[in-house]
Amino acid sequence: MNEKVKPVVSYRNIRKCFGDLEVLHSIDLDIMPAEKVAVIGPSGSGKTTLGRLLMTLEEPTSGTIEVDGEMLWHQEVKGKLVRASEKHLHKVRGSIGMVFQHFNLFPHMTIMKNVTEAPIRVLGKSRKEAEAEALEMLDKVGMADKVDNYPSQLSGGQKQRVAIARALVMHPKVMIFDEPTSALDPELVGEVLNVIKDIAKEGSMAMLLITHEMDFAYEVADRVIFTDGGNIIEEGPPQQIFENPQSERLQSFISRFR
Ligand code: ADP
Image 1 (tube, rainbow, N blue to C red):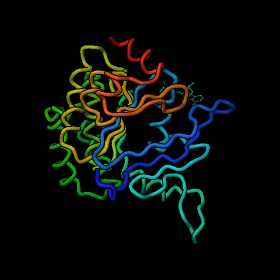
Image 2 (image 1 turned 180 degrees about the vertical axis):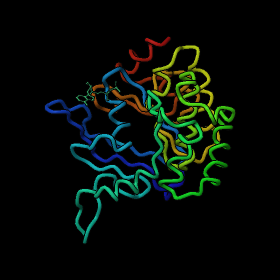
Image 3 (image 1 turned 60 degrees about the vertical axis):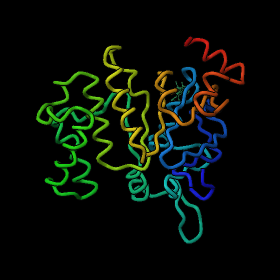
């Protein structure tokens, strides 16, 4: 990889505590532009917290996170690092796409409105322009025929595909998928993973994929991160992580999926 290319996401010395419980210890993690990074690890190891910090849904106890050269929780004012204003956070959030376990669609809006709301309100696009692009993205996820439906009329897999289109229309620099299939019935998992695989193949966007779907991580990720007990224990290309795990903890974790 070209040494001069800067990471699109940098976690530096990130600690996160909930009360007395430290759930992430000194995490350093860079994600390069267009890189697909999968995070695997046992339940409670800190995967979701790692993602929620980048989604700006949790604030780190200490350390910094940068997205596309901008700090998430801090900003420089007159050469001093101070706590970021809401306005600054709002701006940086524009580079971050989020797909949640539970879809989080707006129940009272049609699919078209769900997907056009942010481009119109946040990016200032015209309705016509936003609708044309929404249709393009909904087509990409196989949902173009549902524009006039409401979320309650869709299956879980369909809702998640709409949620992906809703994130895509914002053209984020990085997309975070937080266990996007864990709330789905098993027969609906494949359709969502296939959509994510297709988007990943298109290339331009970095992705942080928190998942317990090991085959999916193997296929999609450029790099796999294994977390346990709030630390990154091992990382590397999928072949190395899944076929030649070094640490005992990763060996034991992987063996459960064989
Ligand atoms: P994973 O995604 O790997 O299952 P999480 O990041 O959800 O792990 O959780 C890591 C640890 O942090 C767990 O011990 C969990 O109970 C704890 N935790 C997560 N969120 C909170 C919270 N809001 N308040 C208190 N503890 C939390």
